[in-house]
Amino acid sequence: MRRLISILTVLVLLMGCGRNESEEESADYFMYYLSLDANQVVEEAYEPEASESEKLIREYVEMFNAAPEEEDYQRLMAKDVNIQDYTLEDHTLTLKISGPYDEMNRTREVLVRAGLVRGFTQIEGVDRVQITTENGELKDSAGNVIGPMTRESFVENAGKEINNYQYTTLTLYFANETGDKLVAETRSVYYSTSMPLERVVVEQLVKGPSEQGHYAVMPSDTNILSVTTSDNIAYVNFDDTFVNGTLSVAQEIPIYALVNSITTNCPVQKVQFSINGESDVTFRESMKLNQFYEKDLSYLEENSE
Image (tube, rainbow, N blue to C red; front, side, top):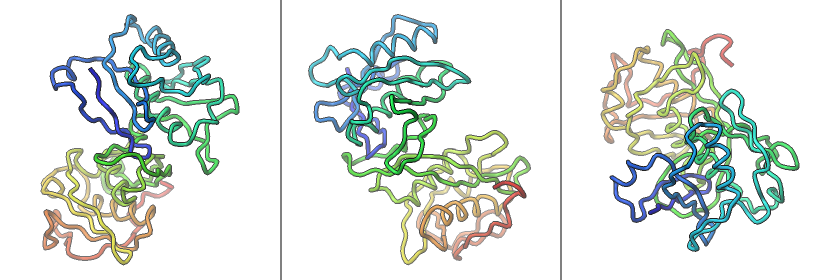
């Protein structure tokens, strides 16, 4: 059985397709292919022969290079594009790909990245995947080098077929160790142009930091109800998890982590918050959510940027 993963411009979305929950839970590994119309990644439960990480990597390389047995989907990579070699160092798997990789259209190329990253990061010891081609380091459409990618590099969302996509590097603000200052962290993500960048920023903050010495500013189960913008103002609506969650940070830190992250990355000057659509709420002791908050980098830890 298999399920389709709709890629929102670049996003990896898991959608059930004929497999019940017990079957999904029982599958330890998956293999990734491309749908016949080339706008979705197909995920199929897979039982590998190998068990050791090194042998698993080799087995997956062979699987990605081979044509699928099923006729209702196609090989992930284009014809004559193959994984020629690989190295694993510090949990980063670098794939050396031969053939006309750079000649694939941009949509398929992003889907290939998504499938390869999801496939290899299942293997213990592989946290990141980096792709090199015969032309050297992989670059995006703007000419920027695309470094090692994790599953979190692909923003997940539901509901639309592939459209346009955007690759961007965000500056996000998280808490320092003592929870009284902000520290800056850069993160490259792909996101659908149908999704507001402001929401992407908030979702990335909820996911939490990825660098050592950086700490979360919101509980990981914080539920984002909506993020909208109007007249250069972002309106962020959470449910009760935002105000009821407890983290060991000063009351200003979650607010200004959000405000500074949104205003730094988006064409927004002010941010207003609400809980279940109501702004007449006080966050922690004295942070009134019915006011407009502007960027304030005084909360940034010295030498953080």
